[in-house]
Image (cartoon, rainbow, N blue to C red; front, side, top):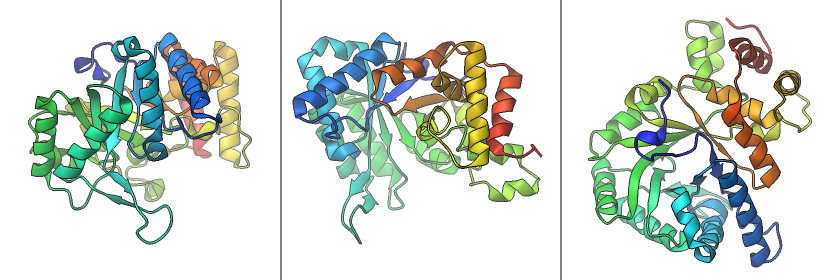
Length: 320
């Protein structure tokens, strides 16, 4: 049975809208940025997408602030939304411009949540994710922070991002509540999660990034796998490509989209969502038209033949 968040967040959508580009000053004035973000939010809600993905690092907090302006202007929208954000990735000039460090200390998690709540202008976060593994993380500190945040009504559920199974199991042992989500890079062009099994005991497996048993652990433990970068930066749904395998996969996407009468984005996401893990794509577009195209994936019914045709085209070589 596919894993999904409905056991924890009843009625949450199978597709999430990533808000990482909100407030990037591409629309001009702040009022124009809020209006552009509001159009994206309304397009998502109208299309049945009600999970909105944030991180305190996105546009240095401005993405959350722009979203918060929408909630402040239209408070009734909050009850139609599930809002998740991430913490623990800290922008800092350590050795050069654009460097990062990590901080999953109790003090930082607590302060980061308070700052996100203020920017988002909401009383609670539905799901808080730890953005990346912190080698200095003390799991008892994380457990204490999670308990205080939950008991204070500031965060309802918790998860992680970019963590493998061993890290999930180690952290979960200290927690008083389940980790309900793990957000990882997953797409038709980022297939390490899939290739590690298909290429097991084969020479092609030497080229695959280590996922260990992360995929199956999440499926077995009821941890929702969320996919960041699920559209592969549009390389399969319109952007021109020089790579032969990507061009072949893009052409296959277009052919299947024409056959089914759906947008190409819906086919790209539908391929991910067809997997038994119940993968939840987090799309990153703020374009209402493209959001609607992505939402069409909710109704796409790919055949096994479609799925393997896309998979083998993107691989650029035969399966083992």
